[in-house]
Length: 295
Image (tube, rainbow, N blue to C red; front, side, top):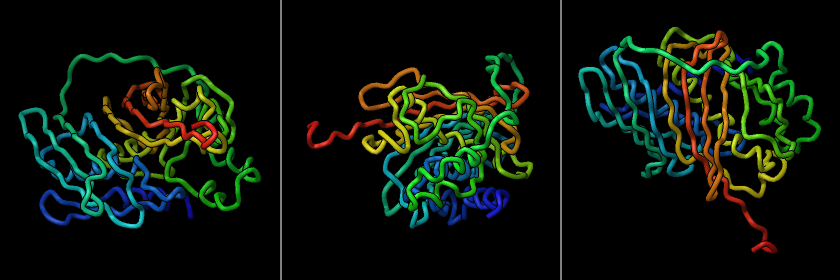
């Protein structure tokens, strides 16, 4: 499958079928690990909320909770409640439903386009995307170390390309500082629609955010994390300025704290020319699974 085809499929997945007023349905990506990817539900929920906005307003923030694991073998129904339509701001809540149960909840705020005061943190000085290996190149270099049953999923074409400055190996359990710098970009061309670009960034913002809190503890895909239960608990995002998700964006993530079986993570997103365009925060489960000998 070509990278543009993978991206087109993702855009189609995030574009929902209207069932009736305020009610939408979305299909699920077939993930290698058999569970619904959190970024997919984030993007689809944002899309559902946008479908109820009749004026020219844009999402500036959302706050969401992952309540139950989703199944990839059945669609997800999204129920939107129109909380408020004000003079400048519009508010919606979205429930994602599978098998009669709410698996995810989001509240989204939209705003008219306004001017005002501006400032931002400067973008960190890091190597650019053209100076780094792609995630696929790194994975191809270690394919012999991956169990055969996981190789197809490990090397599958992705709709979003990632290039991490620190070049961490998912097989390495060495303890690292709790921060990462990752360049990311949609793997192809996207239409000129702010909803599509926000959807793709919401989707991509779930890549690697929780794993930032795992770095100081040596939790890796091929090592200790087989004894760690990990899952996103909540996710919030703010859109500060316009951007294109099919151009390089730098995702700067750090984890100030981990405690009580949870890791707290922050992310900021910059364009290649240094504009701060979005921020994200996520708390995730990091529960150590003890062996019978340790209990």
